[in-house]
Image (cartoon, rainbow, N blue to C red; front, side, top):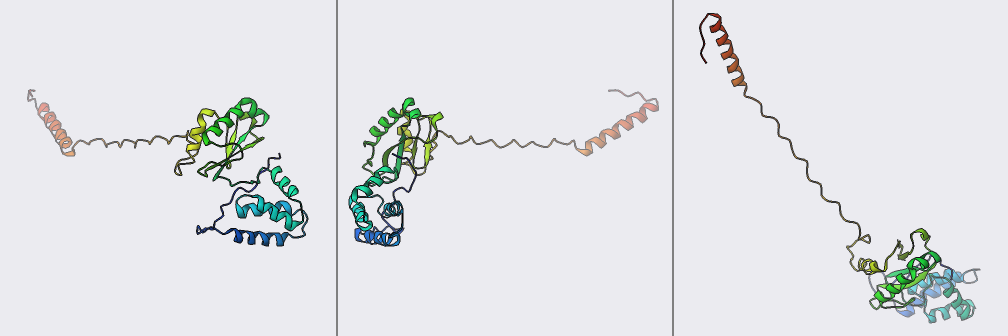
Length: 228
């Protein structure tokens, strides 16, 4: 299977939250088929747009496309099964892909996949009951030096340990939580202590001491004995 990136699942709903009926979705698909009619290499773009409309590619949609484009159902279904980004079942809000390339497999990728299966309660190709996660496998994320690796949506996790999988999944259930749970906020710095200005000696006392010294000097000069 060729692991290529592509469009993920798109909810069958508009921004206002109203879900479209199946007949409305098929009408949109017919508009796309009419636009691509007779164009060479149109099958993959049509499938991509159809998945964007329905969120996935169920059997009745594949048959509809095959009939309109004059192709056999097996040919259309074969293209869908060949490319990893096509889905024939509803995908969850988040797509989990565990790498089973050579480096990841040797360094524990199989154990990561088994733990993920148990945590989500699903098999590869299925979606969790709460609709949060779909589980898939992939060949390589280009992070062989940091195997085993997996990705959730567009975020790649490296050197994944099975014991950390529950913690990783938990961050997706908390909207306010950051994905990088290992990062801790920096400790608040204490405000710098304000230095008090040194107290100045009263000017009046300084002048008084100066006058006293001058008086004593004059008395001593006249031969008067000063005590104390």
